[in-house]
Image (cartoon, rainbow, N blue to C red):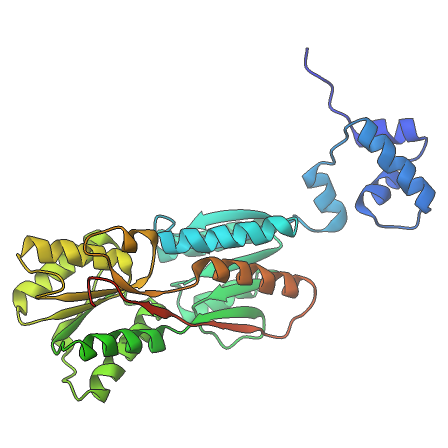
Length: 333
C-alpha cells in the first residue's frame, strides 16, 4: 500500500497552528516565537514532512538552483570545472543544472533562455561563444552571472580569467629552448577567446625569439582528437619541415600525436608536441604529453563562490585570475 504523502496541512493540524505558521517556521521567516518554531519543527520531523521545493521557492523566491553552461561536456576540462562547481554548490545548499551547448551558438542562446524561464538563482557560463551584443542581452535577463574565460565590460557579472596568453608564451619558449624553430599552432574554434589569447602568446614568443610569424603555420580546428588529427595531418603534409606543434588543448594534441604516427614522424625526435589543460589522458598516452596545467577543479569552486557573493548582494564586479603551469613530459622534453 502506498504511504500517504504528508502535507503542510497535516503538520499544522498536529501542531495546532495555521499552515502560515508552519511555513514561517520551516522557512525561518516571519514573526513567530522560538517555542512555536521548535514545536512545528519537532512535529515536522515526527511526520517526516519534506517541504515541496516548488512551494518553498514560491515563499522564498529562490529555486536554490544554479545553471552551469559548458560548450562540450565530453571534454574533461569542463567535466573537472563541473565537479568543482557541483561540490561548492552542494555545500551551499544549491542544486547544479549542467547544460551542454555542443559549441552551437543557437543552442547556447536557447539554453540561456531556458534557464531564465526556469528562474534559476544564477548562471555560470563557461567559454561562451555568443556575439558581444547577444551575450550582453542575455546577461540582463539573468539574476546573477559568472563568466569563465570571456572578457566583457559589464558590472553585472563576476569574471574568471585564465592566463592563456602568458601560458602559451611559456609553452612556446620551452619549445624554442629545446631547439625547435618551425613551430606550428593547431588552434581551436575561431570564436574561442582562449584560442585567441593563446595565439597571442604563441606569436609573442616567436617574435621575441626572432622567429618568422608565418600565418600558414597556424591552423584552426575542432577542439577534439579528430580535429587535431585532421588539421595536424594536413599541416604536416604541406609543411614537412615543422618540428613542433603547440596545440589548443590536450584533446587536439592527442590527435596531433596520431597524425605524426600516421605520417611516420617520431615524437619528440621529429616533432615535439605541447598541449593545454593537463587532463588525465595527458599522463596516460605514449609518449606522455607536455602540457599547460590549468586548475580546473579550483575554477569551478571559485565560480560558485563568486556567484554566491552576487546572490548575497555584492554587486561590484569581481575578477579572479588563474595561472597555468608548464608540466614537462616526454612529448616535448
